[in-house]
Image 1 (spheres, one colour):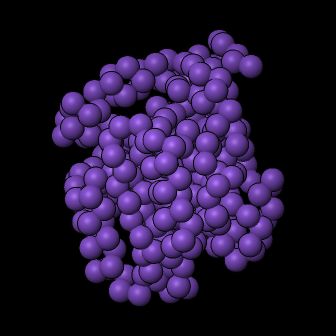
Image 2 (spheres, rainbow, N blue to C red):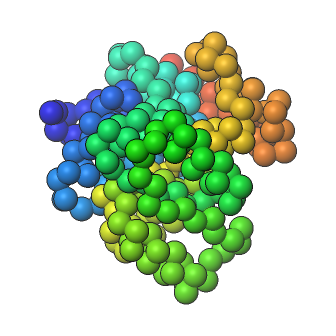
Length: 258
């Protein structure tokens, strides 16, 4: 198995990204679970995350601390691959969750879900256990939709650690989920932690995913904007165009962002 340092890596607008496929990520996850070498975490990074990292050094440092930063969006994948002259490799959070659940169903690995609403987590658990009957779900927790007190946060971490999952999936939304992982990474006793964004909504069926032909053409953002305008207008209408403009300037050699 190739060392992590040998995986193709670049920066888009100063933010680190690995150009890896779904199989690469699953191999790393299984290696980390089996090795017992301590916690590793994966940032599933979209154009929104790249713009956040470009604008805010503090958030960029958080993404830099991730063991893997994979490209969630089609345009993010294309921008990262263009820097290295490689084929784009997109790793959507929902695809990663389904692929890992299939692997875990065979190998006995367990997952814990943290974030989103009780309804979404119930539907997520129901679908995954229906499709993967041997899948072990160690637990699920929907936190209050407000800042947690220190006592509440410590209690949640204790619940997660007591459940002893192999993978912790965090669905708090960007950038809250990345900040939570970074702040609590030394307290969590979980081999793999993943900032998975809206993956729970897609896998549970709460949000209908875009058809494959729309995703392949890079217009999943438009699909989500039409179906969830109140939730997605900011990232689609503000972050999306800004990401496009800045990456065009960077790839065209017109601007360098050191």
